[in-house]
Image (cartoon, rainbow, N blue to C red):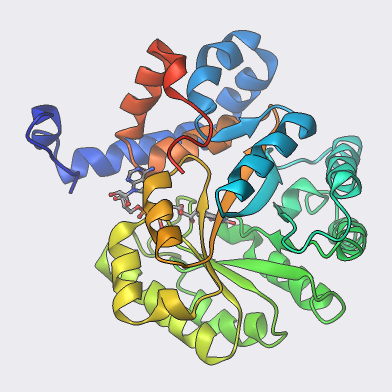
Length: 333
Ligand SMILES: Cc1cc2nc3c(=O)[nH]c(=O)nc-3n(C[C@H](O)[C@H](O)[C@H](O)COP(=O)(O)OP(=O)(O)OC[C@H]3O[C@@H](n4cnc5c(N)ncnc54)[C@H](O)[C@@H]3O)c2cc1C
């Protein structure tokens, strides 16, 4: 159910079903190719929504990103970075994405004892062209990153990609200590994937899963999914895996607290702009916290996914459009 407060009676009249459908509509909008194409070709859409997207997208380019990361680190957070984008099928565009990650690594400080963590979708670095290209490009990034003690987390994508993503991770993990994988608790298959995923001893980031999937494939949000998340976390920790808890859900985090999981995990990780005050509370308890940032121009999908996760964020976005000064980088961390 939506949270209700005495001074916003509107939310009291919104049913849980309306709430769920609102999230679903935003996810559909995020995934719609025509809308995505319109965003990429229309400066109007970009300019209209940019003031609200800035809450989630920290910088347009690497130079400004570096300043943002310094600010977050000064506040005691670990940092993560993704060059925001979508699935890429054109080999030249793929190479441009890889070049961006290599430039990020090149510009990172040598000898940093808590370096930034990189993350990306394999479909961004070649998986849609060929599996080999994705393996080659990820290897290039992993090798360059290892030289600077930087780790790389592979994201998990929609269910149709999961076999290929786990396959690529399984191939790379024995040779690269700095590779990590994101795992979606909502997929029914995930408990069965754990043997393969955990056997290499690489870090795992556990998330609920952001994509709309059929009932046969995944659980919906709710207590059953939270229970499965906790069980998977316990299982992974029991196998000695370094575990990042990727969630913005206070209820789930309380459940993880009750099981002692937050204390045993390597870190709690949240996307920048999503529940900064909640992450801050965990940091203040002395738990390692990572802020996963994104930067770049291609933020349509990322922005709409953040709104879909908690539809009242649409109101926050509209308020940010009305008064862009509300979005002050780092102020809530
Ligand atoms: C670091 C990181 C990496 C991720 N990588 C991937 C990936 O590779 N693949 C993938 O599929 N997904 C990824 N995700 C997204 C993830 O799957 C979820 O969609 C996302 O974390 C939202 O789920 P949740 O656990 O926060 O809980 P939800 O079930 O989405 O939210 C639970 C409750 O928390 C509250 N809440 C949530 N967000 C807010 C908010 N912004 N403001 C106020 N209240 C809020 C609401 O009460 C909501 O009902 C990643 C998430 C993180 C944090």
